[in-house]
Image (tube, rainbow, N blue to C red; front, side, top):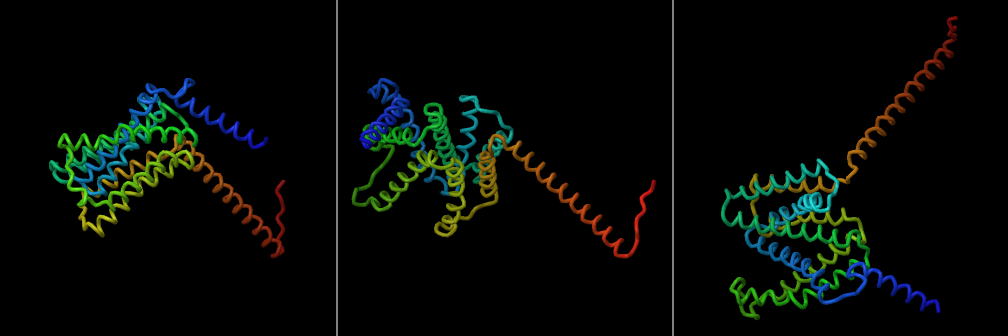
Length: 305
């Protein structure tokens, strides 16, 4: 009996989560396409543009440019979702744009460099649009709602997006060698890592703090830099290195909470109060010490009338 009640409660909770995503009428074909197609297209474009950028730029440059998506999320949220205006995030967005221009200038605006930067910025932009639409659509989703949505998105990709590589092949956009010559080990490994990444990004934000996912994103920049230096023997010029640092600093500024100024002021005031208390304690201790010394020397202080 108790088990049946638990199952009924679980079923009711799942129905509420599903109705919040797909409405009270349930999942229909029209609603399925309307709710999943935009997210599927945006996420496919994000991954595809990211891979195209890797053909033109180093992994360090692409991962650094992809960090600009945090600035794009803020700008889109400010315009579309009417989020709170924050001056520090505007500064971070300007730093991200500055880093993008410097990254393109690093090779004296060479064609491959500009195209690679455009692909990476396009990937960051589609990723930002995906996140803003997700927030507009689901808001603060719990684990069950995120699992329902990601499962539906994966089902849509299996049906429709699976044909995209075939279409690109017959339109001569992509070229395949023989199946025997394909590096299946690398492809399977990359597919597994992509799956892990997507699960951590979509579900990890619900289970943990979003700032942890963001920190993991920015840590990919020094990680890729170490691999490029050790394995690829890439030499970073001053402009490229400065652009990467500027973008990363702007990304970290984006992680500041909305009440960062109030928190900073409270922290400074607490430090001042603590310092004043210590100063008063020091004065009290010194006066007690002086009185004890005067008594030891046999002197008596006579108060003046």
